[in-house]
Structures are given as structure tokens and as C-alpha cells.
Image 1: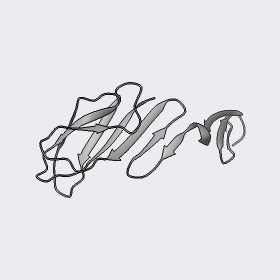
Image 2: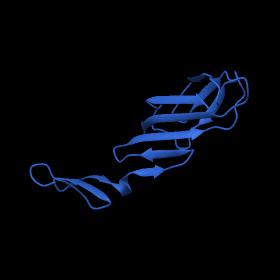
Image 3: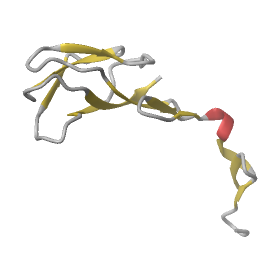
Length: 116
């Protein structure tokens, strides 16, 4: 697009009016069951799947990469076909504590957003 607003992409860099606003090399992405996305502005998203956790037992999940402070938000769910709830508590920059009420030992899938 040309004119007052100019946005170009060369396969690696998005430029707005000839100034880079996104470079693939400045943004880190690892994908899979456990992964992360680090944006150039410092926003950091991580996700993962724990091993089996015993019901009604507070268990610590350690983030693969520490945030600079406690994450802004964490979402967690029991990896099961049946309904169950998860309580998330005691969050720090290095991890969270979770408890679930599924009747069986089950993994927890989690997602956290913060900054690095």
C-alpha cells in the first residue's frame, strides 16, 4: 500500500513508513505442547502441560522461563474429557500452584501472560 500510510513486508520485516515495526528475529516463538512467544516489546506468553497431578493436592508448576514479575494472568484447565475445576494460586514470576478436583490423577494445561 502506498500513500500516507505505507506498510511493507519483505518476508522478515514489517515496515511502516520505512520504519521497522516487526522483525522476525526480534520475536521468539517455540511451539508445541510446551511453548512460548516473546514479542520485541517485552510481552511474554508461555503455555504448557504438567505431568499427572493428584486430585485435591496443591502442586507447584514451574514456568520454563521466569517472568520479570508475577504474570499478569494465568489460565489453567484439567486435561480430561470430564468436567473438573482448577484453582490457581500463589503465583510468582517462576511458577504457580494448582489444585484440581478431577477424581483421577490428571495433567494441567496452563497459559500465562507477563513480561520479561
